[in-house]
Image 1 (tube, rainbow, N blue to C red):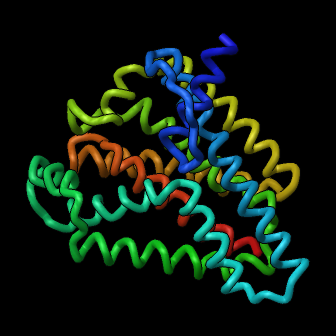
Image 2 (cartoon, rainbow, N blue to C red; image 1 turned 120 degrees about the vertical axis):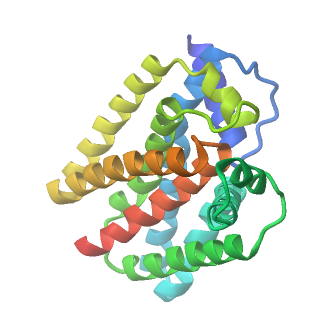
Length: 256
């Protein structure tokens, strides 16, 4: 069991981050389930790095909040290798084509970026930097670190509950291997842990806002994917991760 858990953690870093993992790991049901169960660890590493960077540059230097925001946002994207940004751009191109579901999936598979994908990408990049710049002088570092964790919890829940839009592809292959009951139990435990920590250090209002926003956004996004794409793909899951982070960090502006 411990070996499968460790292999799942390595798979999580291998497929969902740019951190190199030089080890060949079996991609079977126990390992894939463990990978999604430990996906919040990736968020914890990212959130911890973002908070540490914010603390160091905010309190130990005279650097302004805009430059700090740029450094934090860039480091977060570097840690994912731009994987989720790529999914966001492909989703923008596909959705704003206003074509059929089948045609949208074809557009999403095109490696080239179109005008709509570029615009969505610019909005996400600029939006995240602006939000960070507004948050940095005042935000709780615990709340800042919690956002990527919540985003990965939602990503795992969405992977377990949403139907795949395509029969082929890495995301669809992983979804077929998930032990959904075990994964949902793990995500429930992660959710309770994050809520307890946010409640303790940031108060009940922030904890409740995180819970409500994450639930509503995840359910709404799942329905949106079903309606417009017939399910989820790897690109749609990546777009979810980027969008959820921007939503939750933007929401924190109401508490600073």
